[in-house]
Image (cartoon, rainbow over all chains, first blue to last red; front, side):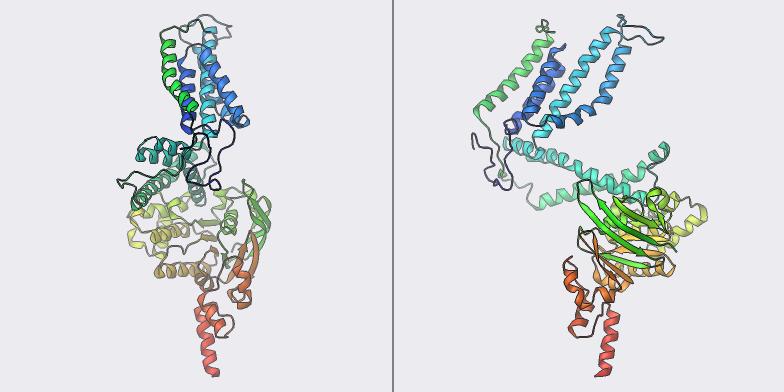
Length: 270
Length: 272
């Protein structure tokens, strides 16, 4: 196994070009552990510090990986959730009495606003962390690396098939919608018509998915998926001693940080 | 009878693929037109414009002289019915009869009229006695015929069939052929895309050949499959049907159908 190279050992470079940029070149498992640690710390460390630090690290990683601009759609996608968090907590925080102002039945509180602000930052930090992982690591790469590290081939297949099925399902939804609209199904009219229209869309989607699974399973078995021999690894990813040390640090350090936070030893932080 | 037309139709997919590149066609009411061409030549993209599922990037699509862009898909479904390549993308009902009734019901057909349409459509595809069965108890070729029945029952003046011959055995092919002929006989405009050149030559009265989103040939089968057109057909990976090839080999002229080959052979025998 190569210590520094970014090139798969068996699949040649012209088939799978190596990733570019320092962050992208990190081992997929390293990036997964970074994302997990960021998510746990963003949600687990009390106060502002956890989410703020994580958000700063995530944004720096995103910029370093050259995906800064591509994080914007993910940020926008959090708006509905963030808006509901802000509204519910600011106006309806249970037991809070420190009102900011009173306007008829509306009485937002400082306690609610602070809680909502922290929760918002946690959600955004988590979303950005997942986005950086998704934008810099192909699902196939991650699954292949985890499989090489000993994850069962069935688990690996389920993970990889699930991720890969998303674009296929979206394409199928488009085709089914077209087929039913061609037979006069109104998918653009009043809301009750649209709800009624879900049945003719869901049926072929579900059946198609089940058929796909059955056919894929048979095709896999026909090609020796359950054979007792250990599968050959055709893709390997760069790894290094510093990365192994980082993973160890993250695996041991993250639970420790969470524990320290829970027992209140990080009370000095804002 | 309803006519179809496209005027300099251009369609560009969001990824930048120019699937149609200036297609101009006039399809008269009651005409039977086969659209052929290699995969990716724009056949399916073209037919999706006739019922408004895709909207022109440039140019116009006209239905009896009216721009389809101004009309809703559900409204166009009263005039243009389309079957798609894969029947499993549309079948959802638990009973064959309910599946066939879906389209007409969407158009507001009720009561005995609906029952009659369903019965006739199922009879046309030879599924008459199986109305109460589950569609997924049928084989693939029969599910394709069921999808065909479900649009026949809509009784639209225009019927478009995307690859109806795929997966059909000889009996199924003959069934599709007789349905197309019956529809045309009833004055309905029929447009069919297919890779089966024998079916196209034997069934359609006009053939349109697409390549890279452009019409490269348009005419009756005798013209399109004539030997001097083969090099052009080859550029879109289309081969003339067997009868045309045999007719040319024997020096009998353009004989795209087995009937025309037989007639030419008889005439040749008479001369000898």
